[in-house]
Image: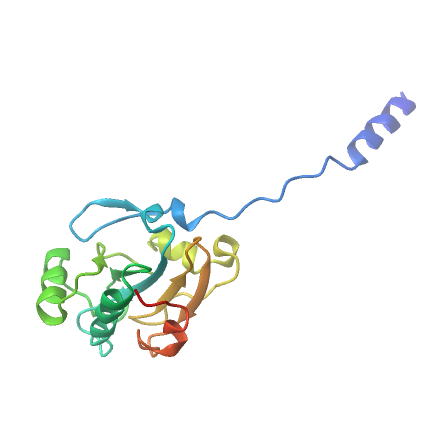
Length: 182
């Protein structure tokens, strides 16, 4: 009986076969609804850089819509600009999705992709922003949006390249140095 016990202990203590490292979830596995309610997989943007921005209509940084639109017009073949309205910061995005879409079109001529209003932080955080702000998911970054118009740049292969706070304008060289013109 003692020998059987020792054999069982040895079996338990022996090193197991090499375990494969778990791969991180992919940016391309995430879905979001457009501002008019259509589901889109981030897979749609494979092969392009993607600039993700949490936007708001009543913020001091709202004029950044102009720069985001210019980026879209200048780099649209190689860059997707994605705007995610959020009311997480001092209720600066109170409108409905329809009101937000109209505001952006009329005031800034926005033609880049806008999505439904979401939570970019907190317990109702959208899965996209969970991925963007959790290093165990994206590989390195834990920074959640600190205010409206925080930005995340994804490369053509779905890897998170950079996080930019709201003070970095869309056309700042910190961002544009990663882009090529159409």
